[in-house]
Image (cartoon, rainbow, N blue to C red):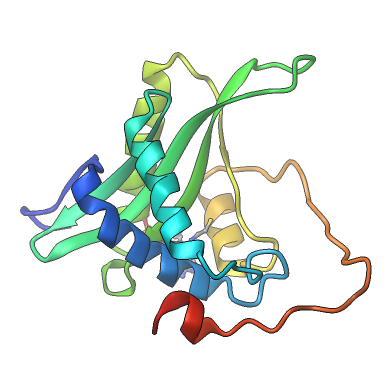
Length: 173
Ligand SMILES: CC(C)(COP(=O)(O)OP(=O)(O)OC[C@H]1O[C@@H](n2cnc3c(N)ncnc32)[C@H](O)[C@@H]1OP(=O)(O)O)[C@@H](O)C(=O)NCCC(=O)NCCS
């Protein structure tokens, strides 16, 4: 991070770059059995989801702004726990992404710091980070940054057939 970089809440003006980073994020998950089943309208739909995360009071997206645009993002929102477990609410952290040329410079650490501060403002005492089971690097990073694994979600297609995805169509690359 140089003197021109800063972390701030995303605004509607960032939506194009947020969606572009999300497309890259999804490419990194292209082999994940659940995430690879992208719908053909995934990008405009994700754009609307980013927009509501930005607009709603109980969610936000943090971005790192560098001289040349956005270098990274992280989404956070308040989530209710099951009514028989404490804590009653936690902050869910999703889609942490740093552009390849801005990695290993502490940018994820800074984005997480912003997310933790935002959570503390809600008097939240726990954050939860969701990682793909097959994303070895993300799981190693998460452990390194103090997140303990609490659950494994398993899937099994009933008919065992998988749809063919045309990535060029969906992500426009
Ligand atoms: C995972 C990701 C967000 C890390 O971003 P980053 O800005 O490079 O992370 P940081 O520089 O803040 O690194 C924080 C720590 O994580 C660990 N880490 C980061 N990248 C790592 C890697 N490739 N391999 C092993 N450990 C790594 C290190 O402990 C690092 O601390 P250090 O640099 O002091 O050793 C980035 O690689 C990315 O966007 N990957 C693709 C999307 C993705 O998989 N996201 C995670 C989904 S949960």
